[in-house]
Length: 233
Image (cartoon, rainbow, N blue to C red; front, side, top):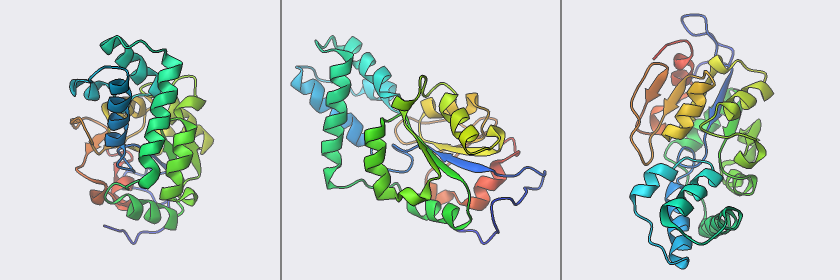
């Protein structure tokens, strides 16, 4: 679904202008949420613990330190937070060695945004080492900016990541559409005042004012993103 409309300054019917598109990474642009869960289950199995699948709904989309701390508390595993974070990141990277599968429609959407010179940022709770590995498969030239969770004092669900991304792009958060797959990411974007397109990956997300829920990025194109600015949908 591509649009033939001209560059990113075009106004919507109510006069609002799309200034930037801010995208989450895991589960939104790349199909890696399952890889994270596999890394977590493998590492905890080595520690002598079987993770209950119910834990997945808690840790999905969260920053590494929060997810790791939760799993330590939930299992009683005898491991420090820093050591667990290191082991999870290393195991995740090992699982990515055979490639990073893009989500359906991700490549086409990124190419369309680039073709129309729409400022685009990748905003992730993952660490920089993970982002740099994944971005290469998506095309680093598609992003004017990438922000990692370990580069910020507060990451998702706080608004800081999206406020900082918008500021670095010189954009008004209210005119930056965020694309997210988890409730944690949606909460961050909405707290920053951004209209949201949610593409749920693991846990369902309900529609709400300022939030549109779609089944896949294949339903999203530039015209659709522009229509979210100032729409109240």
